[in-house]
Image 1 (cartoon, protein in one colour):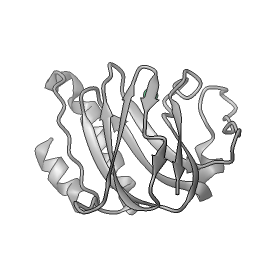
Image 2 (cartoon, rainbow, N blue to C red; image 1 turned 30 degrees about the vertical axis):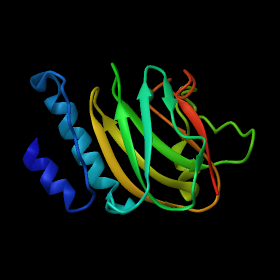
Image 3 (cartoon, protein in one colour; image 1 turned 135 degrees about the horizontal axis):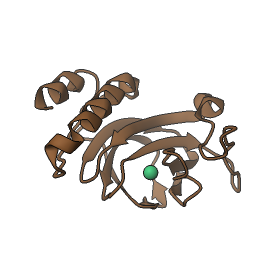
Image 4 (cartoon, rainbow, N blue to C red; image 1 turned 135 degrees about the vertical axis):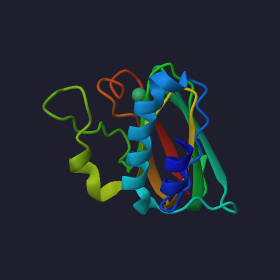
Length: 160
Ligand SMILES: [Cu+2]
Protein backbone atom coordinates (compact mmCIF):
# COMPACT_ATOMS: atom_id res chain seq x y z
CA UNK A 1 0.00 0.00 0.00
CA UNK A 2 2.71 2.48 0.95
CA UNK A 3 4.89 1.44 -1.97
CA UNK A 4 1.96 1.87 -4.31
CA UNK A 5 1.30 5.28 -2.80
CA UNK A 6 4.86 6.36 -3.49
CA UNK A 7 4.69 5.09 -7.05
CA UNK A 8 1.44 6.97 -7.61
CA UNK A 9 3.08 10.10 -6.21
CA UNK A 10 5.09 10.36 -9.42
CA UNK A 11 1.87 11.35 -11.12
CA UNK A 12 -0.14 12.90 -8.36
CA UNK A 13 0.45 13.58 -4.72
CA UNK A 14 -1.74 11.16 -2.86
CA UNK A 15 -1.99 10.97 0.88
CA UNK A 16 -4.02 8.19 2.31
CA UNK A 17 -4.64 7.64 5.96
CA UNK A 18 -7.17 4.90 6.13
CA UNK A 19 -7.95 3.72 9.61
CA UNK A 20 -10.18 1.03 8.16
CA UNK A 21 -9.34 -2.61 8.73
CA UNK A 22 -6.43 -2.93 6.37
CA UNK A 23 -7.09 -6.47 5.19
CA UNK A 24 -10.63 -5.80 4.20
CA UNK A 25 -9.86 -2.57 2.39
CA UNK A 26 -6.53 -3.54 0.81
CA UNK A 27 -8.09 -4.40 -2.53
CA UNK A 28 -10.23 -1.26 -2.60
CA UNK A 29 -7.17 0.81 -1.71
CA UNK A 30 -5.25 -0.83 -4.52
CA UNK A 31 -7.99 0.06 -6.95
CA UNK A 32 -8.03 3.58 -5.53
CA UNK A 33 -4.30 4.04 -6.09
CA UNK A 34 -4.55 2.75 -9.62
CA UNK A 35 -7.43 5.13 -10.30
CA UNK A 36 -5.43 8.03 -8.85
CA UNK A 37 -2.57 7.20 -11.20
CA UNK A 38 -4.97 7.13 -14.15
CA UNK A 39 -6.32 10.55 -13.37
CA UNK A 40 -2.86 11.98 -12.65
CA UNK A 41 -3.21 14.33 -15.60
CA UNK A 42 -4.84 16.76 -13.19
CA UNK A 43 -1.40 17.63 -11.86
CA UNK A 44 0.68 17.52 -8.73
CA UNK A 45 -0.61 18.97 -5.48
CA UNK A 46 1.15 22.22 -4.75
CA UNK A 47 1.99 23.14 -1.16
CA UNK A 48 1.66 26.88 -1.86
CA UNK A 49 -1.79 26.68 -3.45
CA UNK A 50 -4.83 27.54 -1.31
CA UNK A 51 -6.40 24.50 0.32
CA UNK A 52 -10.01 23.68 -0.50
CA UNK A 53 -11.42 21.19 2.00
CA UNK A 54 -14.23 18.94 0.90
CA UNK A 55 -15.69 16.14 2.96
CA UNK A 56 -18.02 13.36 1.96
CA UNK A 57 -20.28 11.13 3.98
CA UNK A 58 -23.35 9.03 3.28
CA UNK A 59 -24.89 10.84 1.45
CA UNK A 60 -23.82 14.41 1.27
CA UNK A 61 -20.88 16.61 0.37
CA UNK A 62 -19.62 19.54 2.41
CA UNK A 63 -17.72 22.05 0.27
CA UNK A 64 -17.03 25.79 0.43
CA UNK A 65 -19.56 27.88 -1.50
CA UNK A 66 -16.91 30.20 -2.91
CA UNK A 67 -13.37 29.55 -4.09
CA UNK A 68 -10.90 31.98 -5.61
CA UNK A 69 -10.01 31.25 -9.25
CA UNK A 70 -6.57 29.80 -9.94
CA UNK A 71 -4.67 26.75 -8.82
CA UNK A 72 -5.90 25.18 -5.58
CA UNK A 73 -5.26 21.97 -3.70
CA UNK A 74 -8.40 19.94 -3.18
CA UNK A 75 -8.28 17.97 0.06
CA UNK A 76 -10.99 15.36 0.03
CA UNK A 77 -11.89 13.50 3.22
CA UNK A 78 -14.20 10.51 3.24
CA UNK A 79 -16.05 10.27 6.52
CA UNK A 80 -17.78 7.13 5.22
CA UNK A 81 -18.95 4.59 5.93
CA UNK A 82 -19.14 3.96 2.17
CA UNK A 83 -16.50 4.36 -0.53
CA UNK A 84 -16.89 7.65 -2.39
CA UNK A 85 -15.38 9.65 -5.21
CA UNK A 86 -15.46 13.26 -6.32
CA UNK A 87 -15.92 14.70 -9.78
CA UNK A 88 -15.70 18.44 -10.48
CA UNK A 89 -17.56 19.75 -13.54
CA UNK A 90 -18.54 23.19 -14.81
CA UNK A 91 -22.27 23.62 -14.77
CA UNK A 92 -24.90 26.19 -15.65
CA UNK A 93 -27.15 27.55 -12.91
CA UNK A 94 -30.11 25.28 -12.23
CA UNK A 95 -28.79 22.57 -14.50
CA UNK A 96 -29.27 18.95 -13.52
CA UNK A 97 -26.53 16.74 -14.85
CA UNK A 98 -27.36 14.15 -17.55
CA UNK A 99 -27.86 10.59 -16.34
CA UNK A 100 -26.76 7.38 -18.01
CA UNK A 101 -29.41 4.92 -19.16
CA UNK A 102 -29.07 3.08 -15.83
CA UNK A 103 -30.86 6.05 -14.26
CA UNK A 104 -28.47 5.86 -11.30
CA UNK A 105 -25.24 7.48 -12.42
CA UNK A 106 -24.30 10.74 -14.10
CA UNK A 107 -23.14 10.43 -17.70
CA UNK A 108 -19.49 11.36 -17.11
CA UNK A 109 -18.57 10.84 -20.75
CA UNK A 110 -21.06 13.53 -21.79
CA UNK A 111 -19.36 15.92 -19.35
CA UNK A 112 -15.77 15.10 -20.31
CA UNK A 113 -15.00 18.44 -21.96
CA UNK A 114 -16.05 20.37 -18.85
CA UNK A 115 -14.65 18.10 -16.19
CA UNK A 116 -11.99 19.91 -14.16
CA UNK A 117 -10.75 16.92 -12.19
CA UNK A 118 -11.80 13.76 -10.40
CA UNK A 119 -10.71 11.75 -7.39
CA UNK A 120 -11.82 8.15 -7.40
CA UNK A 121 -12.28 5.25 -5.03
CA UNK A 122 -11.69 6.97 -1.72
CA UNK A 123 -12.15 4.45 1.10
CA UNK A 124 -13.79 5.35 4.45
CA UNK A 125 -11.50 7.34 6.73
CA UNK A 126 -9.18 8.22 3.87
CA UNK A 127 -8.04 11.60 2.63
CA UNK A 128 -6.64 12.50 -0.75
CA UNK A 129 -5.20 15.67 -2.22
CA UNK A 130 -5.09 16.82 -5.80
CA UNK A 131 -4.11 20.04 -7.47
CA UNK A 132 -6.49 21.64 -9.95
CA UNK A 133 -6.64 24.97 -11.74
CA UNK A 134 -10.14 26.43 -11.74
CA UNK A 135 -11.31 29.17 -14.08
CA UNK A 136 -14.06 31.48 -12.85
CA UNK A 137 -17.53 29.97 -13.12
CA UNK A 138 -20.01 27.71 -11.45
CA UNK A 139 -19.02 24.14 -10.66
CA UNK A 140 -20.83 21.11 -9.37
CA UNK A 141 -18.91 18.57 -7.31
CA UNK A 142 -20.53 15.18 -6.99
CA UNK A 143 -19.99 11.50 -6.24
CA UNK A 144 -20.87 9.13 -9.04
CA UNK A 145 -21.02 5.82 -7.22
CA UNK A 146 -24.37 4.26 -8.19
CA UNK A 147 -27.20 6.33 -6.74
CA UNK A 148 -25.00 8.68 -4.72
CA UNK A 149 -25.56 11.79 -6.90
CA UNK A 150 -29.32 11.28 -6.76
CA UNK A 151 -29.03 10.49 -3.05
CA UNK A 152 -27.75 14.01 -2.40
CA UNK A 153 -23.99 13.76 -2.90
CA UNK A 154 -23.60 16.99 -4.83
CA UNK A 155 -22.66 20.55 -4.01
CA UNK A 156 -22.17 23.78 -5.90
CA UNK A 157 -18.99 25.87 -5.79
CA UNK A 158 -18.77 29.36 -7.23
CA UNK A 159 -15.26 30.13 -8.49
CA UNK A 160 -14.46 33.81 -8.91
CU1 LIG B 1 -20.57 8.53 -2.84
